[in-house]
Length: 139
Image (cartoon, rainbow, N blue to C red; front, side, top):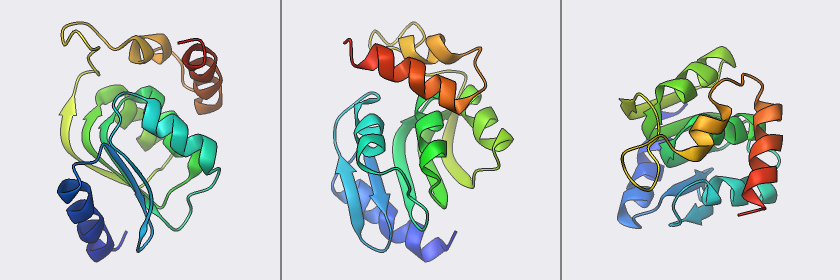
């Protein structure tokens, strides 16, 4: 991953106070939404992000699965959970992060995020995506 490309993307990410950015020399997707919504929207719009990088504010195992499926050249997480980090390492994804946490917290800030909990014992990104989408559309 070219450092200048990541540096440029991070400037945009910070300046616009984004939660998710897909970038390939120019911004191709931006979101300020919270939770999994931005990564699911990105997934529904782009099946392939080769040649681009993604910056995400919070990457848990569910988000990591969606991102892995889209195959960006690099993923930068402001915060990443240990289960997400393990999954990205297992699939050889190029990634970096600012902070590592044991797991993603839910909206209450105390318990594990329902999606992180749902996929914690799963190892197949395809299966994780299928399960998350089935729950996500019913919310």
